[in-house]
Image: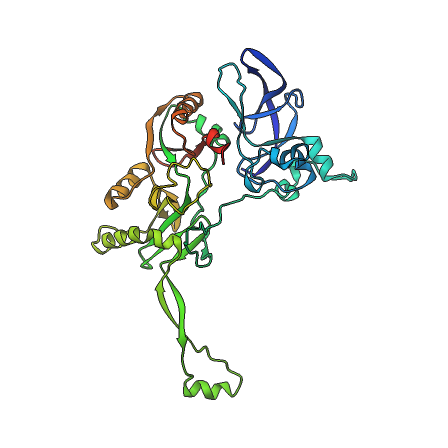
Length: 396
């Protein structure tokens, strides 16, 4: 889903404080996604168009967003997270069930955004035809790879090839329509660990094992300059004609990048199984690096923040015609048991019959467990999405 999209107001729901109805704000539901939003009462009517900005993105410091960045001119009153990140905002109101409601994302009147982008009333296209992410300066802020604690990041490494997707699970509020077609459906729900994405990429043919962060791939060994050598006789002759020989001496040494160092014991275990002939096909293990010195979102409620650094794995990719695709729950679980690695804790493995049943089950779990969220997958892994804990997100 785009970070910014034109949406349609689907429904307006009254809010209550105790038994009294709130007279200033109301809950808004959208046609295009399932995010919960709170807005000024009667600012929108059912059927109106509006502009919605997804959570976990950062607002640019433009006048359109002044009321969010510095309400009443005071930045201390902002409900945004660091770097103007959009997070869940809690309201101690309810829709009749006595459960607090959250506003997740930013909603703006269509006309307000149009007039901001077109102050001189030129013949500008409708907002649906514009790149609103670029026009409004919306960015996806991510935790820097150097997480501190004396750990090193040796450059960014190389970019992911087009055959290997980057890990960034989609919020289920953008995928309800896909899942609703499958009910009743068996779903495996695992804890979303608050850490840094890490992948172990095993290429049997090339006999290489590399480590991926969220955005880059890092080799096991790197080339380092260890000295200089004297030019050969031929090089001295050629230098008379302008040739400049490379006299630096290099050797391959173990990469001390923080991602590679954390992955090393896991890589060693995988190598042993490859040597024994038990592993014959290339694969990728997807996981989350967490524990001391791995900040994740920086939330003080992170349950893994004080653990020893480690990796919790949540998925396996296999290659089909050279392209990485998600393997089934059975294949992933089987490989995790072979290596005796930890997987993200399984919270449930059961059949659900409706969206409401799944939502309520997760909400009840979140009441007792302060975790970032739950990732749900079908058994074949063809559907996966994250269900975020709004209470946890509101504290980031």
